[in-house]
Length: 256
Image (cartoon, rainbow, N blue to C red):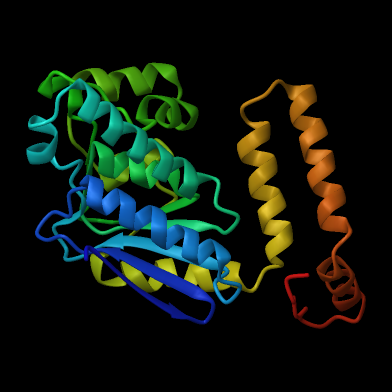
């Protein structure tokens, strides 16, 4: 009902379509969870672009109208659903690129932070405004934000809740790239198509090593990396990659 998607050149483009500002309701979270399960299982998909409809917003936060009518039991249930979706996207075996076309506020910024890479249009704006509403981020924002920007800057952004632009987001490493709004989708697809040509198991192992190893001490992280290295080395794609390098040709990866 609230998602559009298309698959081309092994890239799935998922659009949250709830204009004008694409708020995240329980229904949207459930649809995202279901669709990302499908994309995870689809061998024809090797990379995913996630964006919002229109130019006004990527996602301008959670559905405040829904939240305002929930009691503690209800909000805990909604929060569990949202956290589950964000973790699913973060740990998907395939790379996910957020194409941030407009406002990314609160839960919308949390959604973007759960993606592997983020490309922003020059018109995008960012904020965690929750404290001003008497609440705090509940979808992993306090954790994922500080891993990227550090604890001091994270507290500044979370405490004040002030809006900042795409260039400030780039300076803080919240986004990887900024493009004119008319070039955003093409830029995101270009990155996704490049990733779709990479050996999928190797990408999966890199993602696992970074995500899991980043939450452990250095020695445990090195053990995780070593295990992921061995898994990638055991694939047919590793043989193809090394052979293509020796033969000075472009490799063709089969995902095995």
